[in-house]
Amino acid sequence: MKWKSIEIKSRDGAVVYHGPMNELPIKEEYMLEKSMELYQEPEPCVIYRTHIAKKLYLDIYDSLAKRLQKGEYACCDDLCEYFSHIELDTKNAVVHFQKK
Image 1 (cartoon, rainbow, N blue to C red):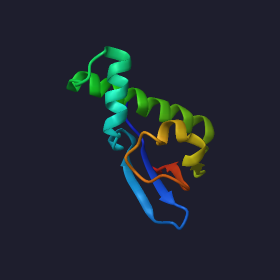
Image 2: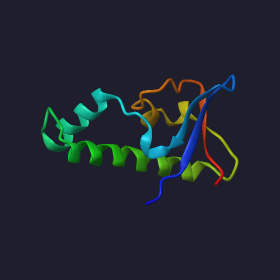
Image 3: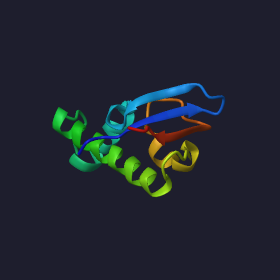
Image 4: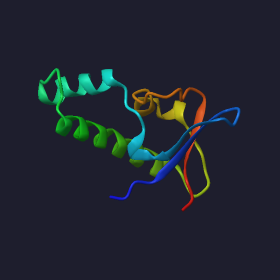
């Protein structure tokens, strides 16, 4: 799958993140929590980390794809079940897919 680029902006227009969706930084506590939940492993290997990250990215993508038409923005607060696991300040921010 070729990942889409996204842009996350704060309400004042400052860019919080710009780049491929699969490079969003994930909180370490989420990685450890999901590793224990899925694999009963307190120190996840790269394979487990990759699986956990890909699952989160796909969940974000699916949620955004359902909400966004070209050029529209979605509020990160409405998707906090996903964006709360991202290591960025997305409170009161908006996200959209970048044009190709």
